Amino acid sequence: MRSRQAEEVMLLAKQEAENASRLKSLFLANMSHELRTPMNGILGMTQLLQSTELNPQQQEMIDTLQSSGTSLLRILNEILDISRIEAGRLDLNPVPVKLSSVIAETIQLVRPLTIQKKIQLSAHIDPSIPATLSGDPLRIRQIVLNYLDNAIKFTKTGGVYLTAEPVPAPQEKIGIRIAVTDTGCGIPEGKLSEIFDAFAQVDASSTRIHGGTGLGLTIVRRLARLMGGEAGVESVVGRGSTFWATLFLEPVLNAPEDIEIPLTPLKLNRPKILVAEDNRINQRVLAAFLQRLNCDVTIAVDGQDAIEQASSSHFDLILMDVQMPRMDGLAATRAIRATPGPLASIPIIAISASAMPEDLERCSASGMDGFLSKPVKLDDLSRELHQRLTLRA
Image (cartoon, rainbow, N blue to C red):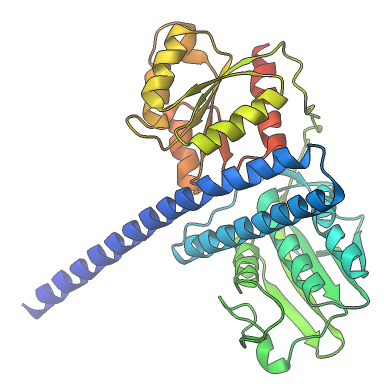
């Protein structure tokens, strides 16, 4: 009897935990959407303003706005990532990747900070590391960027040095140790054991100089472990620190050649693009982006409007917001794919403020061909349009 009662209690506890996890995922998806939607307007309009004629003072203001918005977006991404980690839902998306390109691109992102602080920044990649490996470029870049940002933040004089070296690896794996060394203030020995804990700060006082969520290093360690490795730190107060991460990646046989996708402007005789988006500010941002890319733009205010307009006029491509009133983008895409005739094969690119892996899966399952997360970047939009429209040309 007691055994049966114990089983019922355990079953009830399991159901409650599953419900709590489901509600948490729903909350995160909603928060992601609600925060990313206005961020799309802020960063989108900032991109447009940056390309107009501005006096030096205005340019400085716009650059500050862009930098602050990007920092806010990064904080949002860190919060979402740590939530995925806690839920066991942070996955990797391995593709053929050039480690040297990932590191070079990341260094370019932080170089303005080192120039501003007048400190050195250099990198060395051991030539024995294969040029192309199978890995998740987004997550590798995230590791490198977190380490570089952290090192630059705490370095006043001297420099920051990145190295990538081979390490012994299990069979059929390539082992890489990425290390970032700085000449900063260093970390007290008593803090080293907890520096990778969530929300940990070396200086947690109200007078601390350096900002940050305290989540970056936690995410780095989790990503390193997802890649079969580990993350750690060595530091001496007053002399600097070395943060390292070991990654075990798959080799790539017959790596594909790089395909250079041209950017703006489009050379496709003014393609007609239907934008399904209910938010007025985002309508303006996307319309301005597309007009800059030499496109004719038509706006649909929801999924039902998109179906009606796509059925009555010719369009070369549809940009489809996922969450809309009356009919969402997933339902609208399924309806379009079920329509007899050429409309069923029109390229449809999802635009979503929800950036969870399951969101990409739902978009793909509904029949969408591509995915852009908010806030949308002009270069990403251009690249996606080129890929989809060139294939149909």
